Image (cartoon, rainbow, N blue to C red):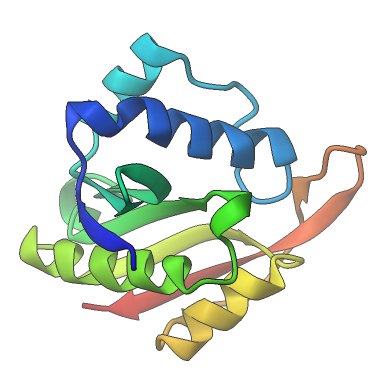
Length: 160
């Protein structure tokens, strides 16, 4: 059974591998550039919190948590989640999202907002809605797929 906890330096290579897999897939994250060991360590260190789902010393999934904005909107958090393709369908995503909500509250955030959930990412959308997230609307053609086509994105929020 996987355990979700704060990341350590020993997790960084595994986190990068999982993150880059999602980036390469090109259907969920807006990023196009992969992380290397140096850029990954810097990127994860710059977050408010990073959580990892680990089983037998292997990173199965991870998330980053940080402010969605600054100043008067700095109480709104944002998070991104990545689960290894070999661990999908095992409840890891739900564990990560649930932990991020608790960590968001513990870090003083009042709301979790997702700016760009890809409309075709049915698994993520179902999970978010099951956990009480509310869709705010739809942004037509907000995400460019690897084949150059555009699909909608759906912002979501959840009070903490």
